Length: 103
Image (cartoon, rainbow, N blue to C red; front, top):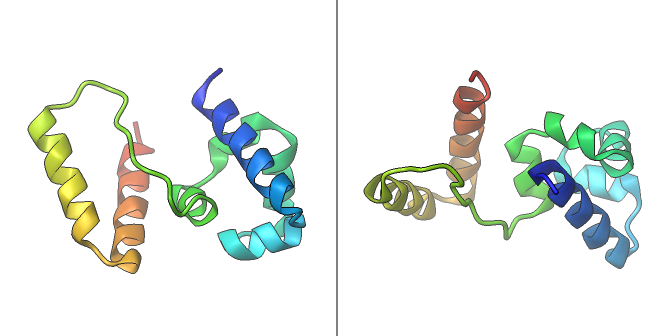
């Protein structure tokens, strides 16, 4: 199972348990209901989800670096993100999304 399938399964399970409509999910995530429908109907559509949307849907999610990274750098990045307020943390994640999405 790849990361997109995991997110897809978690999204379906989380919001199915709560009995939420696509419109309610869209309001929480700050996206259109059509986007939520795509996310809930096909794991491949998760690939187009922005990190900002992901963290809106899963506010308690943790960042886990899955590629080799210097442990000191990883610890420092976590420390910086943890020290930010919610708005600044979201902006930082959007920044990472933009620069990492170019590769």
